Image (cartoon, rainbow, N blue to C red; front, side, top):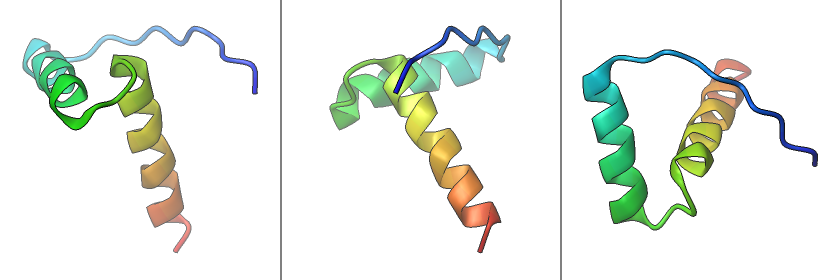
Length: 47
């Protein structure tokens, strides 16, 4: 699947949490964590 840049502005505190969780949980990078969270959100919404 082709990846496209999708810049967004988020709260500084949330950005710090994303950075920390990405490092602790073994995600490839911050984008991977965010992409996984968004996919899960849409899966949960469709239930």
